[in-house]
Image (cartoon, each protein chain N blue to C red):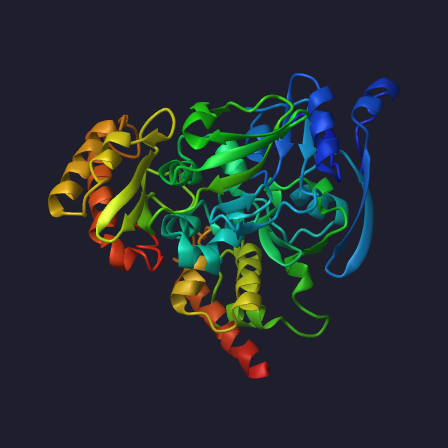
Length: 297
Length: 174
């Protein structure tokens, strides 16, 4: 299999890349890691007229904490960089738990977090993680930069709000208001398969009280689902068995699973319930070490 | 290297120009003129003529086409050949010297790490990246590193043993 013909451009500056997108016509795609785009082009699900390969753009392969405490992930930061990141292990338990569960090691060497967010696959792990963390995407176009909250970034399966001449240059996780804990659990039939169910939980705790909570669900709806009511049930109080149970029930209720070859709707809903409980049962104290809760559920 | 591309006529050729790329493969410098849609696996197999890189599923699942690009193991069916312009590619043919197997290859021989052999080149290159990064892996580390490579024969047990054998040999050699 090979893709249909396309024009290929590999600019060396961001301005040039945005110019190519601006002038490039109706169907231009940005190529970063290509681990979803290239397979889709080979299957002819996608046949763009032009690819703008951003791999030669300088200064986008970073992930770092800014002085304001926010975490910034550049458009060319690969999954594998995040998987091996001591920074994440120390400060971002939900991300550190998710990074080794994305696809498989070979795909992680090439694919990018920002690309995964843009691809907006309902099965994408990073979208759930970023949604749970209250993250945003920085888009850059001819008119400058704008920040798009993750909750508004994805509009449906494989759809995002980027303009045709905008590039997602960065993902941002805001500074924590408390001590971070949480995790990401995913059930997959084998490594690299689409998630049967994935659950991201991100907590920030001050003293014993949860000051911010985010819960998001992978693979149980037409797009990533933010379980906002479940998260609200945790905030403003210490974690208790009751609040955990309530959050688990609300998250299961927020899921919109469909029966398919990976399991029945009820099975998937039960998995959401169990995963929320399992992540929260680790509690702020242990989860805050940032060790991945489990490599695979 | 021979790479035959479609003659589109002048007008279309302007729209879809052939790209000239330079890269190195197993330490040898190469130049090629290719269509941008050519996949790396095809550049290696049909262009360079190295058929140790296998095309298995062709859908980013199986890992039989694994090669190293700048030392990182990737699926060559899922990368455009034009993207290795200026980069270094290592295939299974780059592991052995003229007279000696690479310790990873020796490990697969000693521990019977292959049956049909189709997945083996990909397994070896995934192992190469692991051992370059982590000379003393646990069994769990090895299983994790080859989790993107499918084998339908061995049940993986002997592949894991082979990689651990190679790790020990490489450490002994210093």
